[in-house]
Image (cartoon, rainbow, N blue to C red; front, side, top):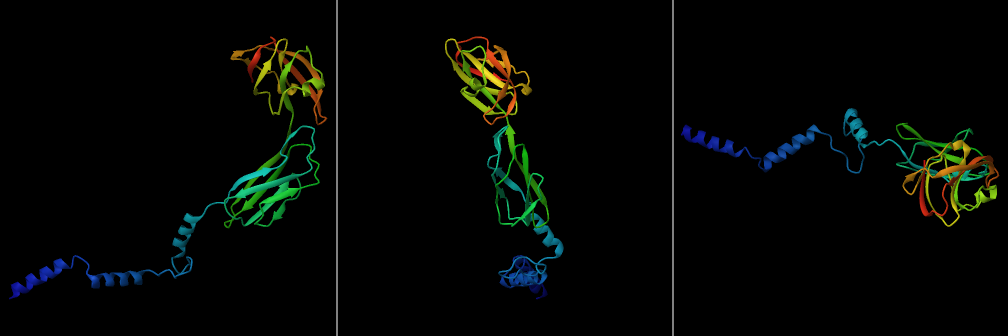
Length: 254
């Protein structure tokens, strides 16, 4: 008889390796007693986790504030021009805690955190001017970004049948662009008797030319005091191709 009871006990023990409904209910109850359940409809609080674990979760969810873009109208200008107005616009990766903007050396202006645009009028800007946006987030992390109202001279290119150019001739050339240096690539179609022209501020230094894949082929024809369309005067060098009538020619300047 004792042997039979021992066998039955062994069978029951083997069966208990798997949770039955009663065992599962018991496990759930024990688990509920171990942890505080999150209340429905509420965010995480110190009642749900210890401060340490809550901080870890906050750290995982945190993204530092960033200025994704910052732009200004009338930001690229010919030297000698005057800028009287500019609209500043920006985009952030999240709503800031604070934000402020500073125009040049003026006092910084605190802005409502919902604003994403600032307009300036009545200015007299004639030189490179920085506008700085600074924002902070809920952890007081701070980030700044700068946009510049800039002024540059132009370089000019085209063709001519003249040996030297007057101020008006340079302004009438077919191509021009604001530039901070002498480097440029362009294409000119020079007909019979016409030479390719490239005019740049003397301060840009001596350029090198590649014409149709070959280095060289240009000489400095003259230096003159040039007045641009904005009334600004500065020394310009006029470079011309050695040969005339080159047809459609790709020129790379370095």
